[in-house]
Image (cartoon, rainbow, N blue to C red):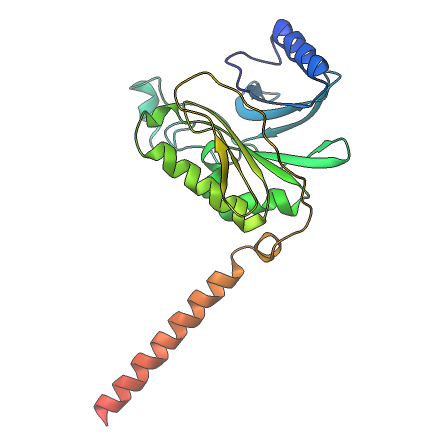
Length: 236
């Protein structure tokens, strides 16, 4: 669930979340804006236990250029528009304990980085969550494209992915990347979703992109050898 309020600074919001966790006797995953000790904003996801205590906090590592931060040397853009964010990136991949199991959440377009997402599964996460605000996509095909990208992350790591969005496509994705259900777009809705905890690891989870990189290098080497042989034959 996203909250357009500051969780750390709003005692009423913390009380509401704690009450909701207690009433449902469940862990809650909450999207928040948190802050560093220097008061710099972070795009974060926190896990709240059923007793209302905070279990973990993950801050988004891969920020959206010109959306969540302005890359150097384009600082002048901040003087033109207030739509460009000023977040700082997080630094750690966080896997959260939930009872006897472990979960992890990656935020928004971090789904496009397969070698990054696999680190959550490699760190022990038995189910993955993707929380995202796709409102800036409007009604374009990008909403569906974002969902298709997340499906690949499920298949690569053989993990269930529960995807929660506002103005996007909220869906359940099974470990084979198949869509197991989704909510209709542009309406307020909620649903129950089944999943299982999985702790086995795929080859990709353990080793990442080294195999396709090796294949690319071998292909490039064979191509160079072929061109050299053909050049020698034409000069003979």
